[in-house]
Amino acid sequence: MSRDAARPRRTDPDPGLARARTSLAWLRTAIAFAAIGGLILKRDVPAGLVVLVLSAVVWATGRLAGAPGTVARPRRLLLIALAVAAVSVLALAVSLVGPGPEGLRL
Image (tube, rainbow, N blue to C red; front, side):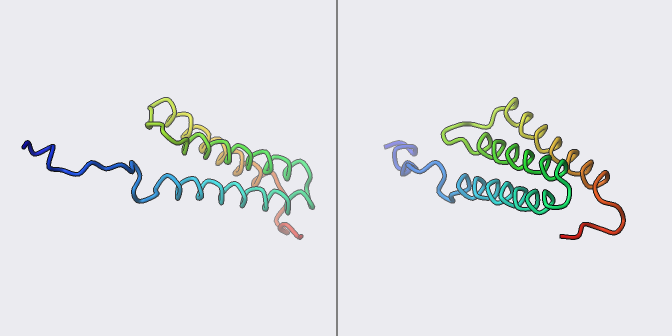
């Protein structure tokens, strides 16, 4: 009997549920963006709409990152990295162009 035949085969490719935890983290981030966008929408409609759109981008990126049965490909990882960077830059722009030094009063 060979060494490979003696080893039990893993039937579950993700025993620690890392894919499920990652998917939930992306979803929580998208919900947080949507909640903040809703709050900003009360004070500044254009900025709130931008953040709400960004929440959809975050959600779609998370769906792309956690697609079951897929292997991480360099192009997919590049797309995810670019989407995360774009969301970060847009969020920074909204925060810099947003309300003045008195802050956001809700």
